[in-house]
Image 1 (cartoon, one colour):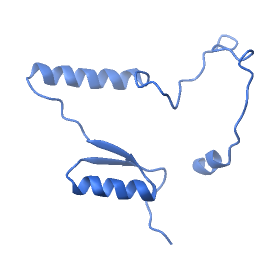
Image 2 (cartoon, helix red, strand yellow; image 1 turned 60 degrees about the horizontal axis):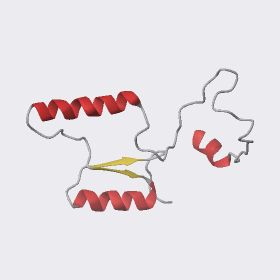
Image 3 (cartoon, helix red, strand yellow; image 1 turned 135 degrees about the vertical axis):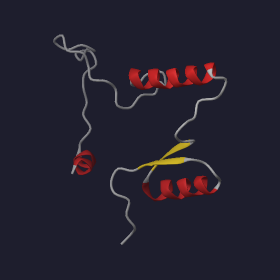
Image 4 (tube, helix red, strand yellow; image 1 turned 45 degrees about the vertical axis):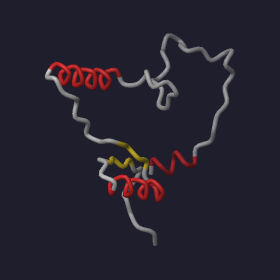
Length: 102
């Protein structure tokens, strides 16, 4: 249902002169898609940094859950399978239930 709404949504335009970063004292929502890798969820970054620091103090490398994250879909599943066969730990992010073609 949410994916259908997203697919059917229309793009919008705005006037950057009148749309400021803070409207009526309310800051903008956090960015969903960013180009800058330094932004994101501060708690997630802190957790990663803390794990790295703890591993360095113990004299080792932090253990990551996955080597690579792949978006789903037909091509994504093929790529994920190929990477897994080469010995990588792979996480697949899929928008819905994984199903075969009909």
